[in-house]
Image (cartoon, rainbow, N blue to C red; front, side, top):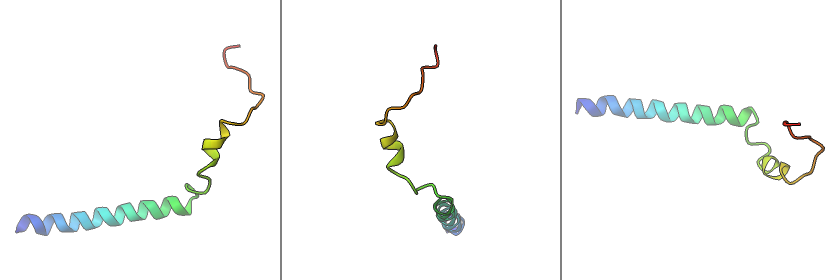
Length: 52
């Protein structure tokens, strides 16, 4: 029983930490442009190869 009294608060704190990390990433715009990175490769640009 003493193990449960230790593990339950640890699990709750980890859940709160995960929720806090998700909300932080939401506020900092991590999910604003989900399609941009996938479509960026389709557009041609004038970049030259690094090798010369």
